[in-house]
Image 1 (tube, rainbow, N blue to C red):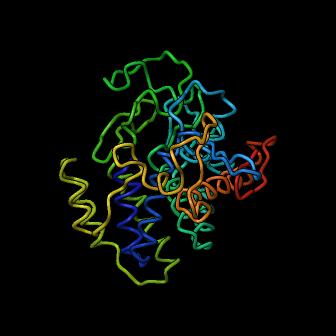
Image 2 (image 1 turned 90 degrees about the vertical axis):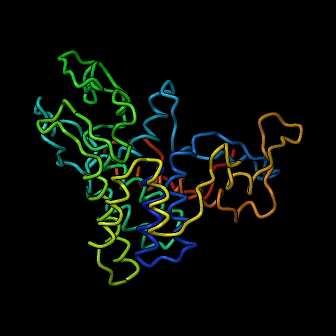
Length: 323
């Protein structure tokens, strides 16, 4: 999914389910920031060492496989539990891959439920992102392998029997992530994919998970109709429609907006040490640092949950990474 769901729709779901506007904003901001937290930043903490933020996204597909494996499956393509299967495939291999992304899996529900129990909005936002992406990325894995092969002419909707390793859903570009997109997954028996159907199901499940936490008694049908109506509009009209449902601030963790959370936490000066940032006053209470801490903790929790798939990884939870 992209900004529309991870920020705008998530904000609507959180606030309408009873979170305060401040917490709804932090949850939604954190959810989208999972996708934008892809730059390695080194922060000089003086005698305490160098803080290096843990990445939750990368578009550098040339990174070593062991590095990609600690990002894509843990934050965007969460494997289902052992024995679960994806949609029926033409090759019958829906049971054959333990890294297959399964929507509404027990693994994704456990991470979301635990995050909600913590009450930490940064942790909740990260877990919501992981849960939502499992709906968008279902039937793909977060690895480079032939299981992800859709066809050399996938976007032209012509099938082929040739196969080669493919990273995640890179062969169909952003088709699985966009509101309003209808596309063909030629690997599946039922190949037509309507993203809005998937996204609305994800939204409903997230909304009821939020309600279970806030203990509010709210109905879904009316809100669903408003979100569905907004999602059916042209892209240039949708963001305004989301704001009509729920007033909210803009998402500002982009280059155009000056990387709001990052700029509140870090200087752009290196103090004479190349490649280093300096922390601003209140660094360890900043949104940026608190988010990074939860990225690190989420990674450790996900590794523990998936320990059969990651038997050699260090699953210790630490508040920061310094060296």
